[in-house]
Image (tube, rainbow, N blue to C red; front, top):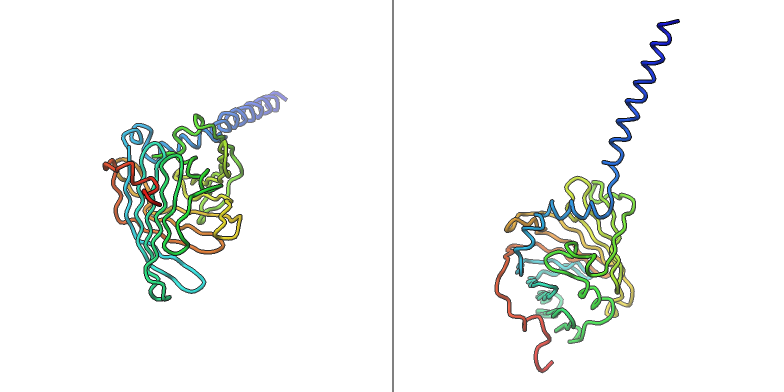
Length: 258
């Protein structure tokens, strides 16, 4: 009888101990959207490293996959605090009888304009403009709360075979974006957003995937991106990324006379 009582007490102690361990582990496993964002910032280099970055110049090559064939080209991306951006793309369409297509997209922090040799020059409006306004260099995650955006955490999904946290970033204005953070490395591996693009017939889902992360001045950056929508897929490979170059503010604005 005594041995049975001792055994029962021991069993209770073991059960209580196991439950205690579970309760201790569960809070550590449960992560909020804010915690995931902070881990992403740390994995990318940390707030101190980001604070040293004032501008970025990226140069690379691209391939444009279309229903009529693949086209090759070059890309230059310029970014400057707080949210100025410029993307210059040149696509060799001579195989299709189109010569070289040039598209120069500029955003000065308030207004945007596109110089387009194929579809014509035009202002950036609607969802595209709001998306640019919601951007923040060198990372939109550093101060999203101050910008009035909210982030909520959803269920995990698979991205390229690995688990990823899915966060929904909702700005004060403009379309929301689904943000995919790798559950192991905490790097940003994918974004997806539905935007209205009149040139492509209305609402489309724009998906961007990031890979080949490399260290540049203490910041881990993707040297490969894949941007896809129902109309086309663009694969970009960066060859050079430099920080803190002196970029003239006028290069982000609509050229005089346009």
